[in-house]
Length: 348
Image 1 (cartoon, rainbow, N blue to C red):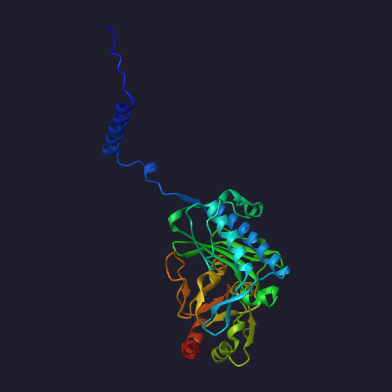
Image 2 (cartoon, rainbow, N blue to C red):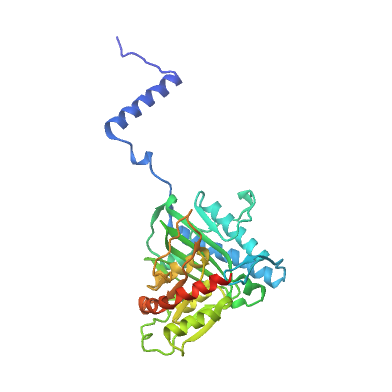
């Protein structure tokens, strides 16, 4: 008599497979592939961030050149300066956030602007995840759990200056933070078509290769401190009290612009004494870190960029480039900064 010819119906086959899987898990544990978390290629995220910053920047530039800003005031800063909102902010924001959401489904995005509507991703242009300029410089890659990533977007930094047509201060910025630490920064100047980017530990754009090292800062006098145009007066008093009456104060617009000026060696430090939003500083923080510079609060603390946390940095800002003694600057500044912060707060 030959072997029995056993046939299982579909229900029986499914039950057999379920029992077999349970026995395997009982004997050997849960397989790695069964509980693997979705991961994202940081190299691909860098390329996409560069392309999307430029995509947003094209919107910013075109709207300004067409003089179609549709500007309005959305609030005031702690210093009493107007916080402006324009069509350039909104169109850039949509281009970046929709593009990022399509390219990396489920990645957390924190943006300065939130006026987004449901959109059919089929009409959103695909984003390149492999740029030649990145491939030429970055040779490695890193896969990071999606849940650990937060993408910070400033679709138009220096909106006030944008409305005044002070084009040199305007930037579009994207930052990728991993577990709250800024790792990838992209700063795009749309009116100059210049992109500065960096990935901490992996490399940076060629135009940052000649950034001036500030090793001679201890003997250089006077110090040059770059500050916000909206409150240059109070910071000038603080800086001169901290670093001497011959300290030069350079008012400028945009946190991205000011951080790049420090990186390039055109200023010794960037000082901000009041509240600043994290999307204004995350990209600059990442680029600075990749070049061994430093950004802290005026308390000397690093800044946490985890998604779901406070989007406001309440304790001021000190930015110095590689070679500067950040904590020497900080120790002199912190002695007078707290008094000034209280003075500004009491007026608003």
